[in-house]
Amino acid sequence: MAVNGEMMDVANEEEDSEPSQEGVASVGGPDNQQHLADDEAGIDEWTEEFVRHWDAASFKSRNSSPRPDLSPSLSLEPAPSPVYNSVDEEIATLVHRSSKMSNALDVLTEKTDELTRYLEELHNVVVTSATTINTMEDSMDLLFTNVEKLLELFSDFQEENRVEVRGRRLAVSLLAALSSTVNAMSRDLKKKGGEN
Image (cartoon, rainbow, N blue to C red; front, side):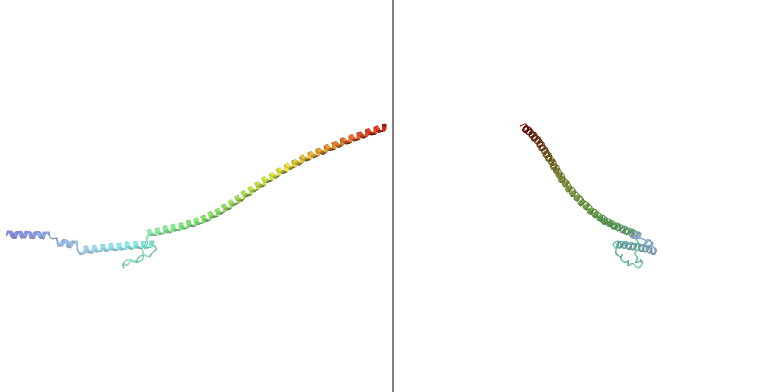
C-alpha cells in the first residue's frame, strides 16, 4: 500500500509539471495567430515600401531609372522624394552658378588680356617718346654747341674788324700827317727859291 501511494504521488507530480493545454491553446489560438500574421504582413509591406523608395531615390540620384517593384500589391510608379528633389535642385543651382562664374572668368580674362595689350602699347609709346626726347636733347646740345661756336667766330671777326679799322685809321692819320709835312716842305722850298 505504501508503494502504491508513492506511485500515485509521483503521477500527480508529473501531471502538475506538464503545461496546461488550455493555456497553450489560449496563447496560440486562431485569433492571436491571425493577428500576428497581419502584423507580419504589415511589417513586410512597410519594409518593401521603404526599400522601393530608397532604391528609387538612389537610382534617381545617379540619373538611372529605379528598379521595378515585383510586388503585385504595390505601384510601379516611384513616389516623389522631397529630400532628393531639393538636393537635385541645389546641385542644378550650383552647376548653373558655376557655369555663370566660369563665363564671368572668361570675360574677365579677355578684359585682362586686352588691358595687357593696351599697357604694352602704352609702354612702347613711352619708350618711343623717351627715345625721341633723348634724341631732341642731343640735337639741342649740338645746336647750342654750334651757336656758341658761331658766337665765338663772330666775336673773333669783330675783333679782327676792330684791329683792321684801327689800322686803317692809323694809316689814314699817317698819310694825312705825311701829306701835311710834304706840303709844308714844298712851301718852304718855294719861299726859299723866290728869295734867291
